[in-house]
Amino acid sequence: MSPEEFRRHGHAVIDWIADYLADPEGWPVLPSVKPGDLRKSLPASPPEHGESMESILADFERLIVPASTHWNHPDFMAYFPNSATGAGVLGEALSAALNVNAMLWRTTPAGTELETHTLDWLRQMIGLPDKFFGVIGDTASANTLYALAAARELHPELRIREEGMSGRVDLPRLTIYCSEEAHSSVDKAVMTLGYGLESLRKIPTDSALRMDPRALRDAVKNDVRAGRIPIAVVATVGTTSTTAVDPVPAIVELSERHGMWLHVDASYAGVAAILPEMRDVLAGCERAESLVVNPHKWLFTPVDCSALYTRRPDLLKRAFQHIPEYLVVSEGAGVTNLMNYSIALGRRFRALKLWFVIRNFGVDGLRSLIREHIRIARKLAEWIDDDPEFERMAEANFSTVVFRHCPPGMSATELDAHNARLVERVLATREVFLSHTRVRGKYALRIAIGNIHTTEEHVRHALELVREAARAEA
Ligand SMILES: Cc1ncc(COP(=O)(O)O)c(C=O)c1O
Image (tube, rainbow, N blue to C red):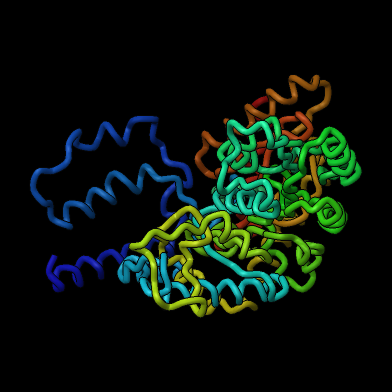
């Protein structure tokens, strides 16, 4: 592609993005495609000869956009929404252009130092002390896995780095603890790292779906008595289902007493701590060994960007540093080589978009957006509470509300099936994307507010669609 052609297509692409971001409601939030539709419309084999960018971009508009679920749409209220903001998209584009690989300081001094620096800003924003060192990973799932790998290095005498965990009669079972509401990434990490799912203790929760610290204490005691070694606890600040906040101050007492690694999964709700009035959601986290928070969830940064903070970068490094000759450098201890803190050698320059977002919005701008989302969620909770046909299933601690429709006279099983049908009816309108969960076994609807364009009106409309679906079921 000649520079002139690049300029022409680049301008066209930027124009397209500008229009798309200016009118995110131009497409329905959910596409009207069936599984396999897109593949049927694509050639079975790759083009032998290069095609024009005109034709490629035309296919992007004709085939790809209509088959996309629009996460940028203000009616996207499923899972945890996110936003591709202008600053974030431009940062992403420039990082693709620079195409640096942030494995060593020398392979990108800017990529390396901006990552450390931007995460230091974010650390200050959420009120963690300066002993926390931050690295960016692709997802919270990967970062939790890295934390649980580093946790073993609190016990160098176990020689896991050297001898591994299999085939050893000298190695007792190593146990990990999280609440029964913790994200499935903890299970996946435990499976992947070779601890085994049977080593994962799912601790019961209290009436507010928070880990019960007494049950944790009993489980740990029980394991110690049986000769097992408690290795780590994962506490969640903002659980996936209901955004419950585990009592980190009580959990950290216990993890310190038993020499465990405390990892806090604050991947969704951690950013709420940038609000002075919400600072205490991270109370106790200053004593955790690690914490993950995702700018790609609720900090207006396009996927992917997940921040892992740790007070023990030495142990994270012990878990992952392995330097072959071809990666030996002469800079010495004065520089950080980010490849040493995770499994990936090659690392994208993700800090650039986060730096753009933080600078362009300013901390104040980010605070007002998050504050507004919390305000809307509280409104929604009020509307639900005021309607006797709805039942709220959990506290709306942040910007997510979990509820169900309960017309009188239905059994528990009927209520589950009824609410599952409501979700399907609402999704069939393609006017809003909401998701579901189960709270103590009961099927529930879940509306999460996190997209930059979502207003009170959008949320009111979403609830109205649920009401319409309920009327249609009656
Ligand atoms: C509490 C919690 N932890 C971890 C994850 C996984 O995040 P990621 O997609 O970045 O791996 C999620 C996803 O929603 C989550 O809600």
